Image (tube, rainbow, N blue to C red; front, side):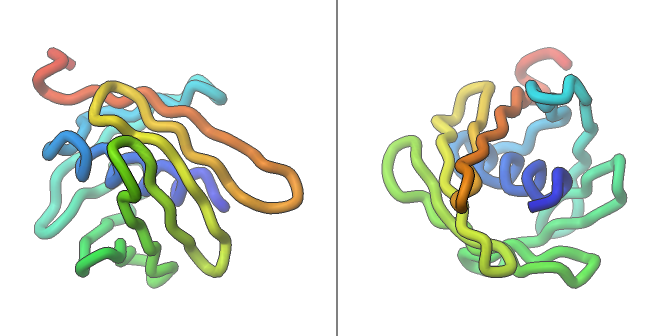
Length: 120
């Protein structure tokens, strides 16, 4: 799964848990920081220009990739798939999201997310 799709999933999982979009996403693995802006029916990844909108349980992307299925499964866990690639993760509504890619090697990616309430 590409880094921009992982970022999109982290942002939406965070929004579904805490009810608001982050303004900034920091990849703890790469040290890169990305800005997020609200868009009609979703949000825009400022770095890539990719717009993500929501149609029920799915995330629909402006570039035609996807859709991304995303389901909250309990208090902190979520699961889904994009392009046949399954993933799981944890997002409790706090300041971080962890995304796990499922496959031959289980890879995980951690993100710190900041909102307006965090003063960023």
